[in-house]
Each structure stands twice: as structure tokens, then as C-alpha cells.
Image (cartoon, rainbow, N blue to C red; front, top):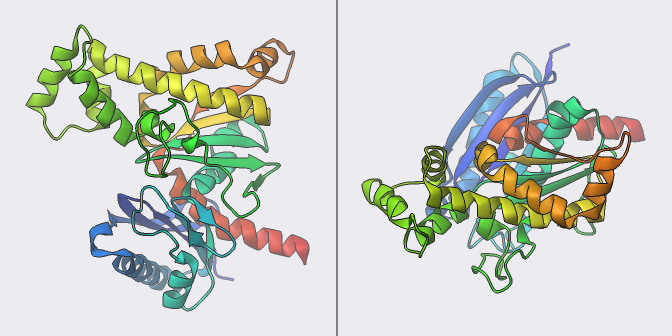
Length: 336
């Protein structure tokens, strides 16, 4: 029998990644290229499907493809597979992404939100495995802020597939406008794009060291959130204040999640999670001050609430997408 493999796709607002993965979790091949949003959604779906077909053909002679798993930005209506005002894919509202991909590929796919799939990967291969739990909640800090919830080993999708949108909880009433149509969402205070905006605002503020940050920006006009983190690590007090605000806002949302869900594990992932040492102190301070459930479990004998950085890094969404066909195949066999 040929060894089984799956194909995973992470359709992001900035990059499109496709990979073939063996059943043991080892990637056989990965591809990454920019998401051509400016060319329109049909062009993006075309790029995606061409990459899936090419990678399947390259590995199909040596193994059996069990399916294609795809993660997209949310909100995503399931099982229909319709995007509902995704903040990081403007112009895709109401787009029947499942149908568009299946029509091009000529077969069914496995589909979920990218944050759900990142959480699934962390459960099976990362922090969930390390802490030996079957339930967790994950926040992904990328272009936006995603959220995935795993309960008893299964993705919690809610009534119509749109559960897990904690990135759009309000943390600053009447704060910065968000692509979702609201204001003051966590996504506007903890994502990579938010860090860039807040740093720009900080540089022109009354902060006593704002001039230092402004000078750094003038020397690097194409700076990004990683540069802001590097400046903070180098001792820039204004840049450090940006990440203190990131942590404070994350703590506010974690308070609501911990008090509501009472899960054993909360994971912070995505590219901006690399700045964990910069925002963790203010995040945990805010969480301890506000969440009585967190404080109570800190005192409990064995059942402690853990808040940790992701173990898998920013590629967890792609890993989760590749895991999904194997998971759903196993679930089908259990039913049968």
C-alpha cells in the first residue's frame, strides 16, 4: 500500500502557502507565494488550485492523497463555505470559497478557518500535546487576530461555523475602526498591522521618548512590526510602550475567555507572538487582576490555567490544514 499524504493550504491575506504532508506530520514539500489580492479573488483561487494540482501530481506516484485541507481567514460560514465580511480579504464578502475551489479541482475539499486549524495543530502536535490536554483556546497574532477553540478534541464551530472571533472583542470602546465594521477590536491593538499603526501614533505622541522612535522610523520608512519589536528589545521606551498596550489588550480578552470557557490551556501564536517577552508581563498582570477564575485555578491543587506561547510557530495554520483530511477521515471511520 502506498504511504498516505495530505495537502494543506493556508490562504492568508498576505501569503498563500501549500504543502504536502505525510501521515506522521512530516512535510514532503511546501510552496509559498504572495496572495494576489489586487488581481481579484478568481486569480487567487486559480493560483491556489494550480499549486494544489502541481504538488499532488509530484507526490501522487509515491503515495495516496487522502484529501485537501484548506484554511481561510474568517468569519467563514460552514458547512456552506461562504466568507462573511472577512476583514483581511476586502471584496470577498459573500464569496462561496468552497464551491469555487471544488469546481476548479473537481472534487470535495476539507475547509475551516485558519485560526481553527492553527488551534487543531497546536492541540495535536504542539502545546496541547506538551500539556496533555484535549481542549484549548488559541489566539493568532498575524495580519489580523484569529481565534480557534478546541473542545474535547474537536473544533468548536458554533451554530454556523463562525465561532471563535475573539479578535473582534472590544478592548477600547470607540477605539480604532476595524475592518469588521466595529471599533476598538483586539485586532486593532494586537495584530502586526496594529503594532505598526500604534508605533506610528506613539512616535508623534507626547511620550517622553517618542522622538527616539520617530528617528528610528525616519531612518527605516519601510519598518514593520518586527522592527518595532527589535527596537523595543534594544531599549526604545516608546516602542516598549506599544507592546505594553498589546499585552494589556490581550489580557482583557483572555479575562473574558478564561472566565467564560474555563479551559486548561490558552495559546498565543502567529508571527507577532515572537514578541512574547515584550507583551507577556502586561498581559499576565491584566489577566490576574481581572479574572477571578484564573486566580482561583492558580491556587488550586492540580487544575491550573496555562497561558503559553505557541509551540509550532507561525506555520501552525498550514500544519492544521494538512492535518484536517486525516482527522475527518478518522471521524468518518468512527461513524461507519
